[in-house]
Image (cartoon, rainbow, N blue to C red; front, side, top):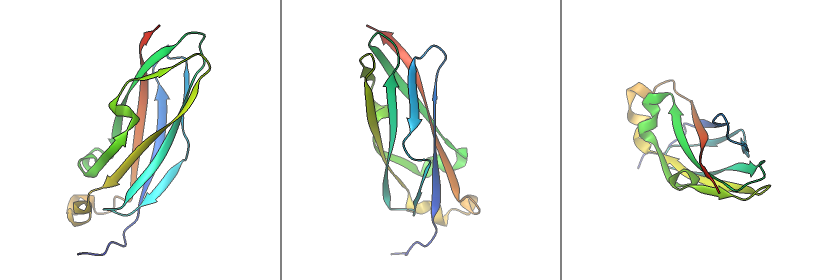
Length: 125
């Protein structure tokens, strides 16, 4: 088994779509992870409206060519999230970078990956 020394900085970004009355932020700015190691990060969402809101998130990984190696094991993005007025929750994303990242010559020089989420309103109740 190849021992990995290469450390990847995974940075986190959070946005909300127009009209979505949530505050949505990454709990940490970045984590450092080696390929094949799993890591846990959190995002925080708060409903700033006076009605319950159901939201769903989309995500993307930058640079795009690294996305194939970015694997989410568990993620709030797999399901809709329902927040009551004023409710705040911490939402985990548990991920790892595939060990093949290290042997792909297209990944040479890529030491930073950005994971971005955008929340969209599905419905108000």
